[in-house]
Amino acid sequence: MRRSMLFCPANNPKLYSTAPLLKPDCIIFDLEDSVAIEEKDSARDLLVEAVKFYNYPANEAVPEIFVRINALHTPYASLDVEAVVSSGLSKIRLPMCESEESILALDNLISELEDKYKIPSGSIKIQAAIETPKGVLNAESIAKASERVISLSFGAEDYTNCLGIHRLSEMPILDYARAHIALVCQAYGLDAIDTVWSDIADTEGFIKESNKVLNMGFSGKSCVHPSQLEPLHKVFTPSSHEIEKALHLIEQFNRNNEDHSGVALIDGKMVDKPIIERHKNIKKELTHEN
Image 1 (cartoon, rainbow, N blue to C red):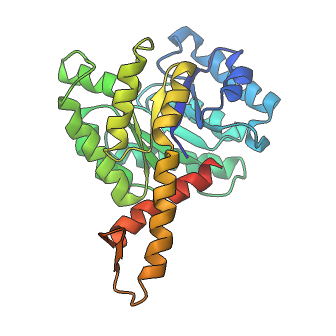
Image 2 (image 1 turned 60 degrees about the vertical axis):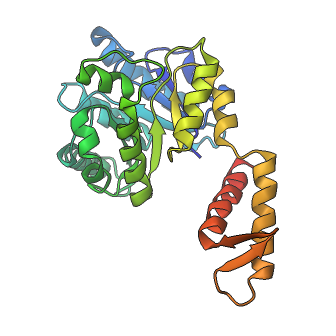
C-alpha cells in the first residue's frame, strides 16, 4: 500500500535513522527542491552512504524507499540516477515530468546503469510526478511509456505556479487535473498519489482533502510532516464497518448466486458483480494492512 509518502530532505543525516521509525508506507528522500544547489553533491553522497550503512535494500523493516531526483534538464539528474542505482535502491521519483520522451530518456539512462552495475533489467521503477499543465494533458502517454512506470503523482504547488495563481485550500480548478490523473492510473493499473498539504497546522483541512482524493480514485498522498501520517492512514484504511460489510456481502453473494447470473438479492437489495468487486478490493486492502 502507498497511502503515505513522506518527504525527507536527503541532506539531513538524522532522517535516515528516524524516518523509518515513523512507519510511513513510503519514504521519499529528496535531492531536488529541499536541497540547495551548493549541497546537491554532498546530499547525493550522504544518500549513498546512508543506504549502505542502514542496509535499506535488504532491511524488511524499512518502508518502501523512493528518491526524488533533480529534473532531467539539470546537470544533477544523471548523477542522481547513478547514485540511486549503484546504492541498490529501486524507486525513482521523476519531477516535472511532461511527456513520454522524459520517461523514455530516464528509462534509457536506467537501462545503461542496470547493465553497468549488473542489475537485472527492469528492476528500477519510476514514479512520474505530474506538476504542469502539459504533464496533465500528457498523463496517458506518460503512464504507458515504459513498464518501469508504477505510479503517477500530482504536484499542485508547481501546477498552480504554472497557471499563475496562488494555491488555496479549496480549488475546484485542481479537480480536472486530479480526476484525469486518477482516471489514467486506474486505466493502466498504476497508483495515483496526491499532492502535499503544506499547512501542517490545518489537520481538519488535510483530512478533508484526503477524503476528497480518496473518493476521486487516489491511492494515497504525499506528506511533508510526520503528524500527517496517522490521519492519512486512517482515511485510506477501510473502517471496521466497511470491512464487516464487505465480508458479509461477499459471503452472501457467493451463497445466494447459485445460478451464476451475476446478480443476487442480499438484505433486500440487488447486488451485482461490480459491487462485489469493489468490496473485494476492501478485503484486499485489509489483507495488506495486516
